[in-house]
Length: 95
Image (cartoon, rainbow, N blue to C red; front, side):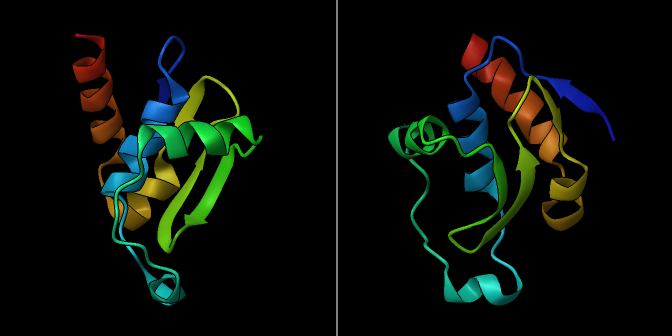
């Protein structure tokens, strides 16, 4: 498990990237929404003060965006490869 430095990266982009790659699991199936998260929705959640995401619309997340160090250990456990997705997504968005 690695801490990913997301300073200088839009946290709404990180949230959207992780949500759109997350799986619906367990009882989350009763809350599942198939549409991807939009940039506006991600920003609205963060603007409302939400920084920890356990499940969102049925998808398992288990990440905190409270600070600039993102741990994807629990996300990886449930979804796999969150760290790699974030790093790849950050590189793409910076270009």
